[in-house]
Length: 131
Image 1: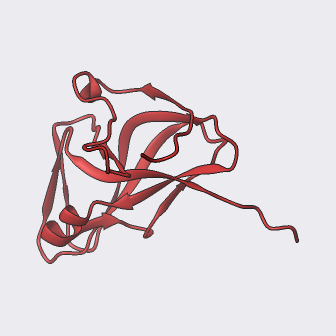
Image 2: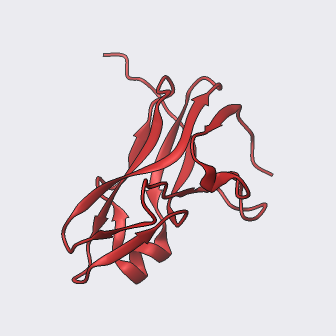
Image 3: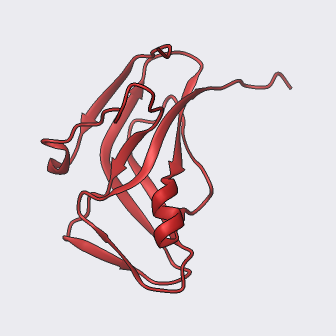
């Protein structure tokens, strides 16, 4: 069993109505974030990146913890869709909607659909340097 932290989540999109953020198994460390568009889908052309709303806002209530957005390994391997900056950081004081910047590394147009799992959210301890 992993240590737990306190996080408040506000769902901003109906895509989570029946699929709230949850861990897939007892050993999972990432929560799957889903695409929450205005339309049903969007195309991402080779080499392009798209800011994809994830439909949730967070309040990390445990001191010394931040949220990190990582690519889903299957989506990156099979479709070439990855988090564009490598890893996204959610600072503990950020309260807005989580946005995932998705980059198409493949040589083909890729389509993201409403509710599709696009990235994973992991909470990790952080330190500030004494400079």
